[in-house]
Image 1 (cartoon, rainbow, N blue to C red):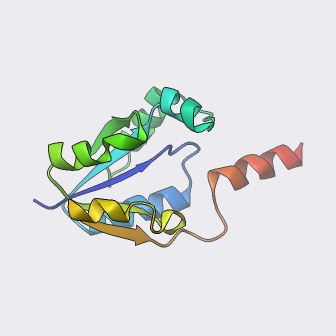
Image 2 (cartoon, helix red, strand yellow):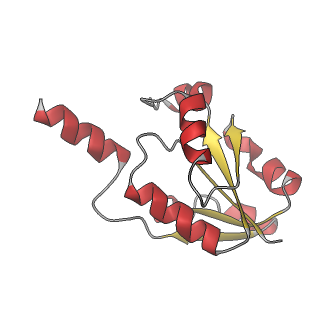
Length: 130
């Protein structure tokens, strides 16, 4: 079984999220999603509308996702890759080059982002409509 892993906050799920999860799943047989915890998001200075548990529930309902694990810090990726026997690490192209060091442990693939959509854009658009 070929395992794939990706990471993110996955707040306010939109078609860009679905596209990357679908493409990641197509690269293997089993998709693990490292979901940023609320505490880790606070460290990153990133807020989420939904709590970790709510975001996890939503991700687990998406047919491309086989398992959701907590992402608690930047440094856990190597351990996750080893623990889950991951062969492919996937991130969006906006992270291009940032995780090349993981190629020592698995294939690293950067998938193109879906143009015109992001959680930040959705939040901004909603704010500006008020």
